[in-house]
Amino acid sequence: MSSILTLLLFAFTVSSTSGPPAEVTLDPWSYTDQDLYPSAIISTATVDWNGDDQDAEDKKTADDPKPKKKDIPIYGDENGWLAVDLAGLPKNAEVEVTIAIDGFLKPSTWKGKITRITKAGEARVFPKAIWDYDALLKVRQQRPVNVSFKATVNGVAIPEDNETYVLRALNDCMFYVKYDEDSEDFDDFSWLFAAYVNENHPEVDIILKEALESGIVTDFDGYQDDDPKAVMMQVFAIWNALQRRGIKYSDISHTTPSKTVVSQTVRFLDDSINGTQANCVDGSVLMASVLSKIGITSYLVMIPGHCFLAFDLSDGDDAKRVGLETTMLGNDEIKSVEEIAHLTEKAKLAEFKASYKTFTSAVSIGNANLKKYKDKLDDDSDDADPDIQIISIPDARDLGIMPISTYREVK
Picture 1: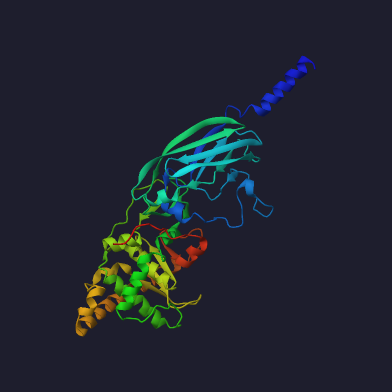
Picture 2: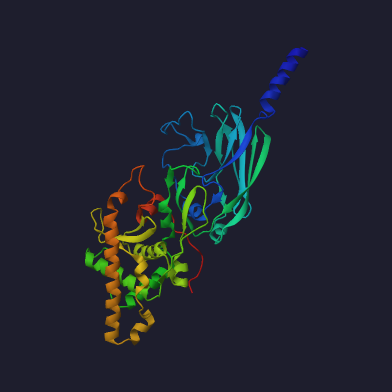
């Protein structure tokens, strides 16, 4: 073999296998900027945002929509929260990407061939995240975490990037995410509030037992009697039982500001009960948890600066919807369930009347707000007001939003 041919073959081999060109760069990518929200990560663990449609290039089928020319090709887990943006990639590069967070995200790797890139050689890679969900469930105060982003291209390591992110408290619930700090465009995440509704919490059965002991109703059968009045009395019995728990309104809802995420602090069911405090969202979440347990369809209704509960009086699409202002739970000073037996019939009747009067007032206020915001609550267009939302708990469950289990015993 001639020396010239040998040199040509050697040059071709080096250019094909020696690795990426020097200009290949790695940039971390996070859907929520440098804030990470455990509540969102946990509650959406099984959610497939796109359903049958696949955006990731390595998972596409013939029926999937074609990406636009300007779109950065996606590889890996298109439902992920963290990714790596690579630029300057050669075509058909063999790529390996790993992302890890000490104590919370085990080293998570995607490995494969990048078959489609932009003109600038760009691609975005989402490794399937191996989260430590038990660790995330214990994050009750925000804290810094070290996030490492690593990649190799054709076997050659790209300079890694190590970033400090903020892991938000589990009680921080995302409302909506802006496309960037100055953008008016956003993605709605209000349905994440349904993750704080926990119909499976053991305390729910205790509340129902106490409601039965009050004697207001003899059983909780949801819509089985097909009687709206019976449904209303079941809701009142639960209301009365929560009043007897001494739960008071407490306006604690603010979180540390984020550049792109609008969020609110939400107490978990056991936090509200143990602390006998609830803000507008907390009280609505608490009521919705118990109503969901007995099969009554409930909603969290978001209006500017406020949240209240709504529920259906019957099953079906034509059901009448009723509002309930849960901040009024603490308006009456009534005895605990254990003390009812020691009250005279006159005193007992007086307490029930006071509780029912407050309940009907709460219904009137809730209904007035449903009527006031009806048009905007029904608006499902792209221009809908993000601060005015109605969140159906059953629809959220169908989407895959799971209740967040807090692993804390109620005292």
